[in-house]
Image: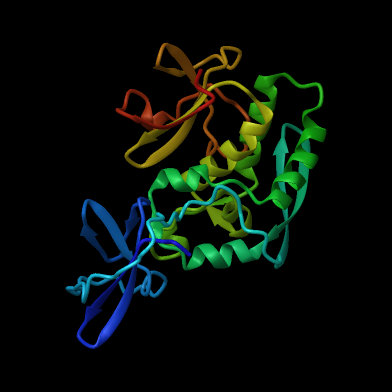
Length: 273
């Protein structure tokens, strides 16, 4: 196939290593010539120990391709449909979205290695889920201003899902791609940001940034019509649009109270011009 591969051994066992510039957590790797080679044989086994793997021989005629663990688009695999209703309120109006998602994506990610946080935020929705979401959402957004669109979307991500920390729901840290947020019964702030940003990209052209606190992710959007609390970044003011809370509210332009005045880091930006 052309990938840069290596064989390594531990006692009588052989293991396949592939070169990848994608940084993986909790996966054994070896280095050679400034490149990282990850243990592909144990990557879904959960056996992430520190055994001293060794190269047995120099392999001849290996390829030079880098194996990427990023999803720029989901593979076109047969769907395993899971239909879910998402209900929330905006004022006196009750909104109901019914989305048929592909549970196979949940199966894939359940055994996928742990990646850097940015990868989950970059991973798109499946074509099917995106089409259903945008078709239903845009019916409610017709004729609304950009601020009203963003407030509507914030109400959705805040109130259509149960909030739960990963350690409680899964017993370990499990970042989710946007599609998984639609699959699981509960989600946390990182998961809400992933879903919000994948939808918002289709609804707005305003520059957006992801703002990271030590224990919380939120969004800033360079749209002055939002007003309220903002953070300055690269010469623009990014107004807070928190996808996580408060539940039951569609108010935007408000920094979550525990994070006012706290240090933060911008970890991702979109549409920066």
